[in-house]
Amino acid sequence: MRAEGFAPVWDENSRILILGSFPSVKSREEGFYYGNRRNRFWGVVCGFFGEEIPDTVQGKRDFLLRRGIALWDVVTSCEIVGSSDASIRGEKIADLPALLSRSKIGSVLCNGTKAYSLLIESFPSLAERAVLLPSTSPANPRFSAKAWEEALARGLSEEECP
Picture 1 (cartoon, rainbow, N blue to C red):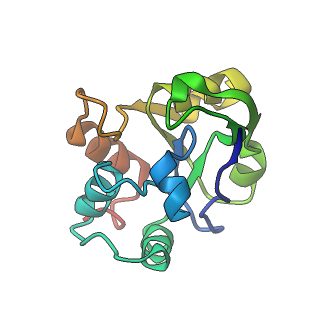
Picture 2: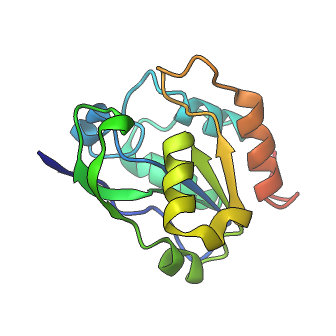
Picture 3: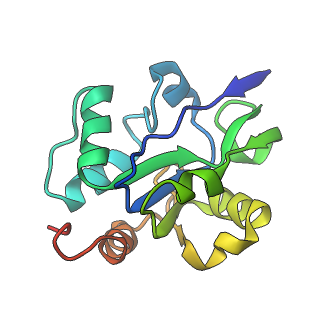
Protein backbone atom coordinates (compact mmCIF):
# COMPACT_ATOMS: atom_id res chain seq x y z
CA MET A 1 0.00 0.00 0.00
CA ARG A 2 1.27 3.45 -0.93
CA ALA A 3 1.81 5.90 1.93
CA GLU A 4 2.24 9.67 1.77
CA GLY A 5 4.64 11.71 3.87
CA PHE A 6 4.32 15.29 5.08
CA ALA A 7 5.04 18.69 3.58
CA PRO A 8 8.25 20.28 4.81
CA VAL A 9 8.26 22.65 7.76
CA TRP A 10 10.50 25.56 6.82
CA ASP A 11 10.71 29.24 6.02
CA GLU A 12 13.22 31.47 4.28
CA ASN A 13 15.11 31.93 7.59
CA SER A 14 15.70 28.21 8.20
CA ARG A 15 19.41 27.49 8.77
CA ILE A 16 19.40 23.73 9.42
CA LEU A 17 17.42 21.02 7.68
CA ILE A 18 16.77 17.90 9.72
CA LEU A 19 16.02 15.15 7.28
CA GLY A 20 14.38 11.85 8.13
CA SER A 21 13.70 8.91 5.85
CA PHE A 22 9.87 8.54 5.97
CA PRO A 23 7.27 8.97 8.74
CA SER A 24 6.57 6.00 11.01
CA VAL A 25 3.12 4.48 11.36
CA LYS A 26 2.59 6.45 14.59
CA SER A 27 3.66 9.68 12.90
CA ARG A 28 1.33 9.04 9.97
CA GLU A 29 -1.52 8.38 12.42
CA GLU A 30 -0.78 11.62 14.27
CA GLY A 31 -0.27 13.56 11.05
CA PHE A 32 3.11 15.06 11.95
CA TYR A 33 6.79 14.26 12.24
CA TYR A 34 8.10 12.04 15.06
CA GLY A 35 4.69 11.19 16.48
CA ASN A 36 5.89 8.12 18.37
CA ARG A 37 6.28 9.34 21.95
CA ARG A 38 9.18 6.91 22.44
CA ASN A 39 11.13 8.52 19.60
CA ARG A 40 13.89 10.70 21.05
CA PHE A 41 13.67 13.43 18.39
CA TRP A 42 11.57 16.06 20.16
CA GLY A 43 13.30 15.47 23.49
CA VAL A 44 16.81 15.95 22.12
CA VAL A 45 16.04 18.93 19.86
CA CYS A 46 13.87 20.80 22.38
CA GLY A 47 16.27 19.83 25.17
CA PHE A 48 19.20 21.35 23.23
CA PHE A 49 17.44 24.72 23.49
CA GLY A 50 16.32 24.16 27.08
CA GLU A 51 12.65 24.08 26.09
CA GLU A 52 9.78 21.78 26.92
CA ILE A 53 8.34 19.66 24.12
CA PRO A 54 5.30 21.49 22.72
CA ASP A 55 1.99 19.70 23.25
CA THR A 56 0.52 20.47 19.83
CA VAL A 57 1.54 20.13 16.21
CA GLN A 58 1.28 23.91 15.83
CA GLY A 59 3.48 24.36 18.89
CA LYS A 60 6.09 22.06 17.35
CA ARG A 61 5.94 23.96 14.04
CA ASP A 62 6.35 27.28 15.85
CA PHE A 63 9.30 25.92 17.85
CA LEU A 64 11.10 24.71 14.71
CA LEU A 65 10.64 27.95 12.79
CA ARG A 66 11.58 30.13 15.77
CA ARG A 67 14.79 28.12 16.13
CA GLY A 68 15.74 28.20 12.41
CA ILE A 69 15.11 24.50 11.87
CA ALA A 70 13.49 23.01 8.78
CA LEU A 71 12.11 19.48 8.95
CA TRP A 72 11.37 17.08 6.09
CA ASP A 73 11.88 13.52 4.89
CA VAL A 74 13.92 12.36 1.89
CA VAL A 75 11.00 10.18 0.77
CA THR A 76 7.69 11.96 0.16
CA SER A 77 5.72 8.83 -0.78
CA CYS A 78 6.44 5.12 -1.04
CA GLU A 79 5.28 1.61 -0.45
CA ILE A 80 6.29 0.61 3.07
CA VAL A 81 5.57 -2.22 5.50
CA GLY A 82 4.84 -0.74 8.92
CA SER A 83 7.63 1.67 9.85
CA SER A 84 10.52 -0.34 8.43
CA ASP A 85 13.01 1.76 6.44
CA ALA A 86 14.31 -1.49 4.92
CA SER A 87 10.90 -2.14 3.34
CA ILE A 88 10.67 1.21 1.48
CA ARG A 89 9.98 0.58 -2.22
CA GLY A 90 8.91 2.74 -5.16
CA GLU A 91 9.94 5.88 -3.35
CA LYS A 92 9.38 9.42 -4.59
CA ILE A 93 12.29 11.61 -3.51
CA ALA A 94 11.77 15.12 -2.11
CA ASP A 95 12.90 18.10 -4.18
CA LEU A 96 15.59 19.10 -1.71
CA PRO A 97 17.53 21.41 -4.06
CA ALA A 98 14.41 23.57 -4.51
CA LEU A 99 13.94 23.89 -0.74
CA LEU A 100 17.61 24.67 -0.17
CA SER A 101 17.62 27.34 -2.87
CA ARG A 102 14.78 29.21 -1.15
CA SER A 103 16.24 29.26 2.38
CA LYS A 104 19.42 29.95 4.35
CA ILE A 105 20.00 26.26 5.11
CA GLY A 106 23.69 25.52 5.37
CA SER A 107 23.69 22.05 6.89
CA VAL A 108 21.54 18.96 6.52
CA LEU A 109 21.33 16.72 9.58
CA CYS A 110 20.27 13.23 8.54
CA ASN A 111 18.31 11.31 11.15
CA GLY A 112 19.73 7.85 10.53
CA THR A 113 21.51 5.87 7.85
CA LYS A 114 18.55 5.46 5.47
CA ALA A 115 17.97 9.23 5.26
CA TYR A 116 21.68 9.82 4.70
CA SER A 117 22.14 7.12 2.06
CA LEU A 118 19.04 8.21 0.10
CA LEU A 119 20.19 11.83 0.23
CA ILE A 120 23.69 11.04 -1.06
CA GLU A 121 22.39 8.62 -3.69
CA SER A 122 19.81 11.12 -4.99
CA PHE A 123 21.81 14.34 -4.59
CA PRO A 124 25.57 13.64 -4.49
CA SER A 125 26.30 17.37 -4.65
CA LEU A 126 24.78 17.77 -1.16
CA ALA A 127 27.28 15.38 0.45
CA GLU A 128 29.45 18.20 1.81
CA ARG A 129 26.44 19.70 3.67
CA ALA A 130 25.17 16.38 5.02
CA VAL A 131 25.83 15.05 8.52
CA LEU A 132 24.93 11.44 9.38
CA LEU A 133 23.47 11.28 12.89
CA PRO A 134 22.30 8.25 14.85
CA SER A 135 18.61 7.64 14.39
CA THR A 136 16.37 8.95 17.15
CA SER A 137 14.16 5.87 16.70
CA PRO A 138 13.41 3.93 19.89
CA ALA A 139 14.66 0.86 18.00
CA ASN A 140 18.22 2.31 17.78
CA PRO A 141 20.36 1.16 20.74
CA ARG A 142 23.32 3.30 19.56
CA PHE A 143 21.57 6.66 19.87
CA SER A 144 23.77 9.56 21.01
CA ALA A 145 22.26 12.81 22.25
CA LYS A 146 25.77 14.30 22.34
CA ALA A 147 26.23 13.78 18.58
CA TRP A 148 22.92 15.56 17.96
CA GLU A 149 23.81 18.45 20.27
CA GLU A 150 27.20 18.93 18.60
CA ALA A 151 25.65 18.91 15.11
CA LEU A 152 22.96 21.41 16.11
CA ALA A 153 25.59 23.70 17.62
CA ARG A 154 27.71 23.56 14.44
CA GLY A 155 24.71 24.33 12.25
CA LEU A 156 23.52 27.39 14.14
CA SER A 157 25.19 30.72 14.77
CA GLU A 158 26.50 31.51 18.26
CA GLU A 159 23.54 33.84 18.91
CA GLU A 160 21.07 31.04 18.16
CA CYS A 161 22.67 28.47 20.46
CA PRO A 162 21.62 28.26 24.09
